[in-house]
Image (cartoon, rainbow over all chains, first blue to last red; front, side, top):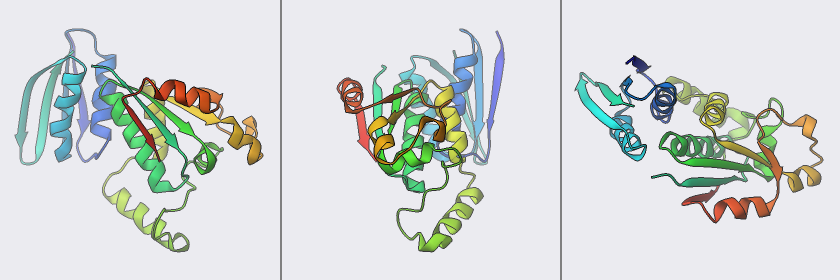
Length: 73
Length: 139
């Protein structure tokens, strides 16, 4: 199982969402995609997309305005 | 949860083309299908080197307003139209060109970015896609 990191720090709408989707498309079943970013709405909306795609959020954390979302493909 | 977004890009204004591409990318990112129909002033944006050439829909001020908005966008880290269009294609979005507009405005296939265009079509194709879409917009 691979772990794919997606760095979206400093990026704004719709890039974090789009880059998450790109990474999830490349990931294989069971792989973990970790997205790191600073755009506030994306922290709420990436989980919405993950739900819509029928995938699973493993962890969401935020520290000093930087969030990390872990998704299992 | 799938679904489809079908968006008519009638305006060639820079800010409206941004809206269309952002919504299209958002739909794809959230697991939907998406089609963008470029017609009238929107189709001008599919000409070679035409994507960013549109004016601002308001406060264009002979280009000064556009320049200011572009500067602010750059500062805010907004992606370029070119990047958004490439992402849209990469995520499987369809770019459709209205062939009637091409006829009226004397635009030939070789004037357009043919590599990005999935199909050349008319209203029937739009209706056929829109009737099974959960989101359809006219921009």
